[in-house]
Structure formats: structure tokens, C-alpha cells
Amino acid sequence: MVKKIAGATETMNRKTRAVITSGQELRGIGTPELIRTLGIGNSTFYARKQNTDDFRLGDIRRMARVLDLTDQDIITIVRGK
Picture 1 (spheres, rainbow, N blue to C red):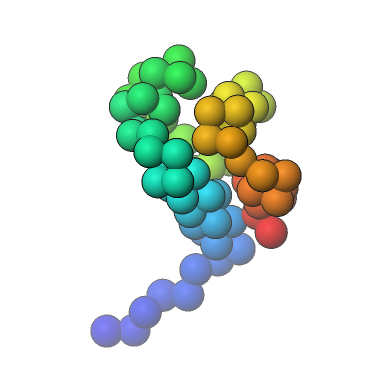
Picture 2 (cartoon, rainbow, N blue to C red):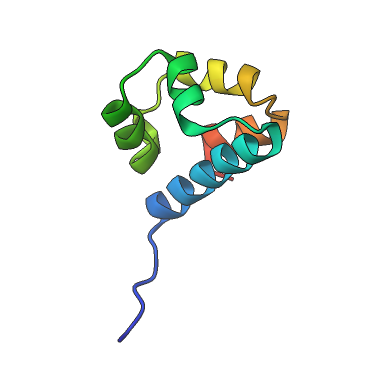
């Protein structure tokens, strides 16, 4: 089977998901705790994590604080680089 090459948007989504997941792992914060901190529902969180363009500025700010994200991590989330 031929492996599909990810487009630019999917690549940015993957980078954002990786930043969030690594932040959770490093801080020992589970997904339910992160969802409570963000103040959104489970389905909303997973939908936004799937299509990371849907994260709101407040979500990013709270994640940056709770996950103690570096400036580079935040740039990766915002710019996908």
C-alpha cells in the first residue's frame, strides 16, 4: 500500500499535537486534567486536537501555562514551524 504524504496543514497539526503530548508527558498531566484546565468538553478538546487550527487563543494560553511550554513550543503551535 502506498503511504499518503501529509500536506502542509496535516504536518502543522502533527507538530502541534506532538508539542501538547510531550508537554503532558513531561509534566505528568493527563488528558482529563488538561481538558478540565481548558474548561472545554471532551469532544471539543479532541476535535480541536485533531484540527489544531480550531484551538482558541485562550486555550493556547492556558496550555502554555499549565504545560510550562517554552517560547519555541508556543511558536510551533502558532506557526507550525
